Length: 314
Picture 1: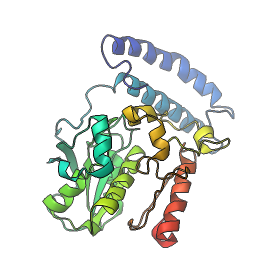
Picture 2: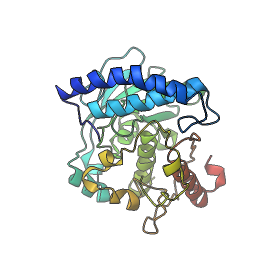
Picture 3: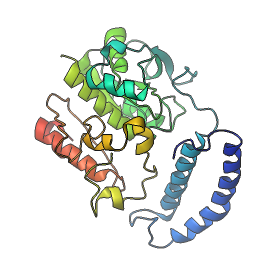
C-alpha cells in the first residue's frame, strides 16, 4: 500500500514502532542472516552491501507507507538549490491528445505548470541536453538536487562533455504520465533542436522517458505482464529494494492496464500489445543483475533491436 499512514497521529505511531524495530530487531537479524548464504544475499554481494540493501528496502517501504520523511520538494513549488536553477515549465493541454486524453481524464490528471531544475553549466547553451525523469516507483523521490537520484544527473553531465546541461523535471507522484510539456519547453521556449535532446531516466523515470519518446514518435511530426512465469526475474529477484507499486501507479485504470498498454508495458508479451520502435532515437539501456524487471528489460531490448537495428540499441 502507499501513504497508508501519511496522516497524524498514525504516521507518528507507525514510526514510533518501525524505527526501534528496525534498529534493535531487524538489523541484528540481518547481520546474522547476511553472514551466511541466504535469500537476503546474492553470491556476488559483500556482507555490508547485503545489509545496506536490506535497510534501503525497508526504508523505501516505510517512506511509501508514511508519505516520506520530512518535507520533500515536489511539483507544487520551486525549492531553491545551490547547484541547480529552478524554472517553471508551463503545461500544454493542447498537446495531450488521443489515448493520453482519455487516460488522463479517467485519472483526473491535467497538464499543469511544474518545476524543473537545470544542472550543469549556467547560461544558454546549444549543445546537447538531457531531459531527466527521477526514479522512486512513481511514489517517492523528486527532481530537486537533494533527491536520491540527483547524483545520476550530475554524473551524466560530468561524464559527457558534449552534453553539459540537464533538465531534471518534477512529476506528480502516483500520477505519472508522459505529458509533452517538458519537451515543448526545451524546444519552443529554450530553443533546443529535437535532435539534441537526450531523454533519460532512472527506474520508474526511465519508463516515463521511454513513454515520452513514444508519444513524440507517434504524435509529434519531425509492469505486470506475461513475463510472470516460473523462474522469471519478476518472481525470483525479490531483493530489488522497491516493492511492487503497480497499484499506486495504475490507479483507476486497474492492473489489467499494465498488460495491454504500450506506454506502461512496452515489453509486454501479450499479442494484443503492438509496441513498435520504428523511428526511435539511439537508445542505451542498463540494468542490475538483481533487477526485478530484468527479463522485461531484456525483452524490451530485443524488441527495440528488431525494429531499430542492433547498431542503435546498446
